[in-house]
Length: 149
Ligand code: HEC
Image 1 (cartoon, helix red, strand yellow):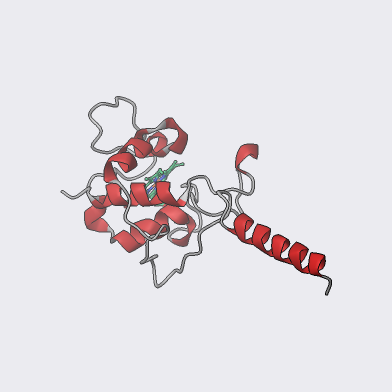
Image 2 (cartoon, protein in one colour; image 1 turned 60 degrees about the vertical axis):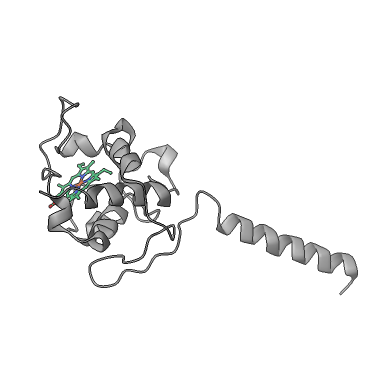
């Protein structure tokens, strides 16, 4: 191979590596039983950021759920109250539910927040991208785990 060809091949290989880890890609995860045991980012999430995300309009959680959110008047009643979710579910189960709630209930109305294939009813902006990032999923999981009563 000519020297310049080798350089081009190396360049293409390195670009492929970069695009693998781009913001739009999914971090690999392994479903074991009814959960995902390992953090999607390799580190624990931040519960305070997770709480803020659950309350944020962008995640739409409280359109369906209620919970221990005294500062918010309007909360949903289409889904279980999130109070005590950390007692009812392990961290591993909470993570899988956030990634893909349809694993627990194939007919669920809860969005799959970390899946980019086979989604129905996704807005155009979301096509091909997970709704939340791996770090956001971990923050929310960390927060839900604190909801013990
Ligand atoms: C469109 C409605 C909807 C949205 C939006 C939604 N969920 Fe859900 N969620 C549900 C329903 C319905 C269930 C009950 C189980 C099922 O049908 O999947 C549920 C179940 C859960 C559970 C288990 C509840 C329990 O303790 O039994 C958790 C935890 C949860 N959702 C967290 C969230 C979080 C966090 C968000 C936002 C990032 C969210 N959900 C967004 C509808 C929704």
